[in-house]
Length: 112
Image (cartoon, rainbow, N blue to C red; front, side, top):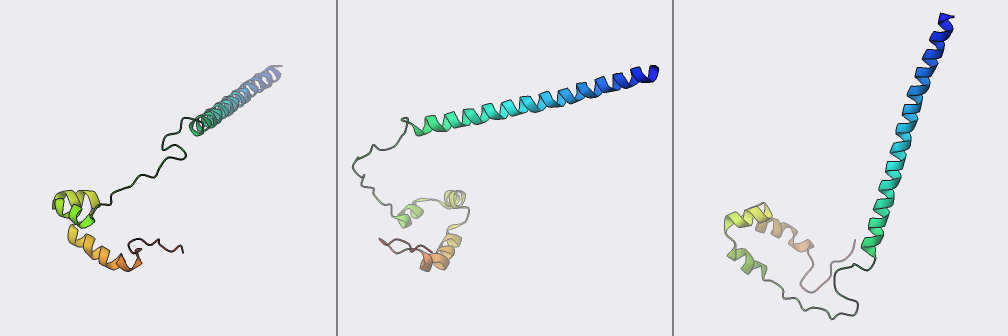
């Protein structure tokens, strides 16, 4: 008789643990579904109406190009190194290496 009660108690504990695992999985699934729904709503809200930028049909703004050499001359060595992570000599050496692969002024780069 004691053995039968022991088996019932073990079955009860096993069922309780199994139910806990099921409830955890259910909570996790609901949390994931809620997160997915929130992300979908946020993406929809961002794509609708509240868009920044120029309005359709707006005139193109004329941009003034900077003379890079003049800009580099105004930078001290420390500022240049902090911004480009190399000194000016290294920058110009790298430029000499890649210059032939860069598009010429006013031309678009050919797509590979």
